[in-house]
Image 1 (cartoon, helix red, strand yellow):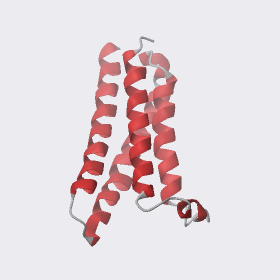
Image 2 (tube, helix red, strand yellow):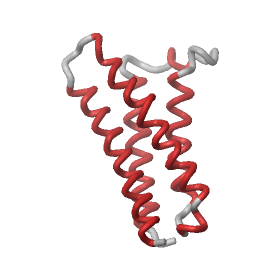
Image 3 (cartoon, rainbow, N blue to C red):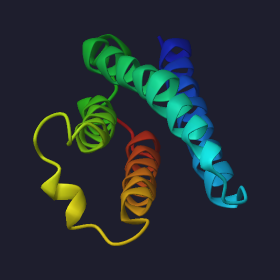
Length: 127
């Protein structure tokens, strides 16, 4: 099962790497109205992928002997940002009103950095 554990970790960190690459591309691209494409890729492909891996980590935690906190942190990361992105549809648009200019993007970056740091710490610990 050590191969399964390592494969899950590789898949998780590849997904986080793609996510980080899309954030970096968004910030380094010149301002234009087509930056929506980056968010499209993140919310349509990367977040469902990371959410699926979070669920898989929770389901397989005993079989692979991994901490359940890996699955929880992935689901919290994806869930919080998805709720924030859909806050207007959910009637919570006032939350975005509290954020300064580019605050939404920085919330993404802060949660990404915290999630990545937690994942690194949890993977480095022996379970």
